[in-house]
Length: 140
Image 1 (cartoon, rainbow, N blue to C red):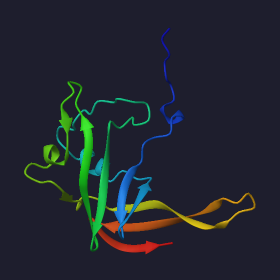
Image 2: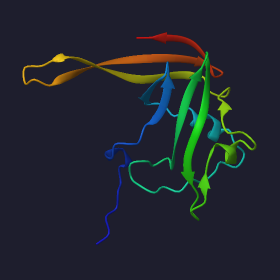
Image 3: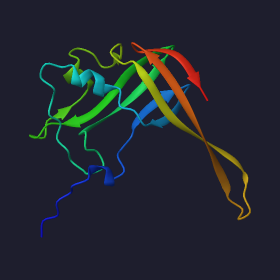
């Protein structure tokens, strides 16, 4: 039996990670996409799972006011692993000077015990505004 998936949005997608103020967050944006769309020969990443239709995921870090791609996990159809150094030769991390836009991260904080005795989480969104990879503003 073959199942055809017509709506890719049905599956929750793996989120990119952002290290900000020594904390790791999930973010809903994909800053590498702006770079890939401007490449002459955009790489064809292999989709291994329906939870990552883009075929890659990255880890990003704010160093000072600058956004860096510090890890990329992807592979080709042939199974060759693809990392930061494959897209950016001789670099283990790269300043994302191509990225301008807003990154939304979800901050969860544990609060006091709830009625059932468990700690509850309070979620708060944080918006980071970038211009050419430089943090311009952070809004809670």
